[in-house]
Image 1 (cartoon, rainbow, N blue to C red):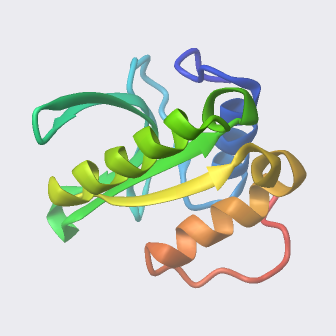
Image 2: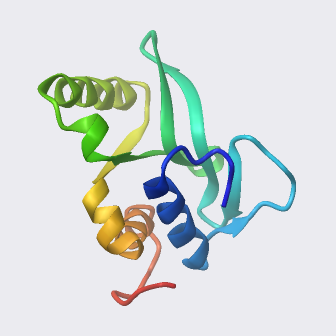
Length: 136
């Protein structure tokens, strides 16, 4: 899998994205761009500044030609279960939205149990027509 993925959950989600048929892995080595397709570029570990704060997105789907800027976050229990983490995540989502990003956030358990369902939710959010069954 791609070297930019920082956790096994991210590796699992990336695999489901690639199996969906909507994204194809990039042949050229890139630190950020992991796949491309009709819905835009799939980026991993994208650094950005939103309302003066620096963040790194787990994944993003970006297509400036259609004004698509979608942040996709995977919240593993270890890093996202404390009160301070919950407050931080909510503030982060608001700052990203203020900077023009949409945010979809998945619990680690969701990705672990059915990464394909998570990807279908992302694809539908982006306007793709996808069946209810697994895409992989």
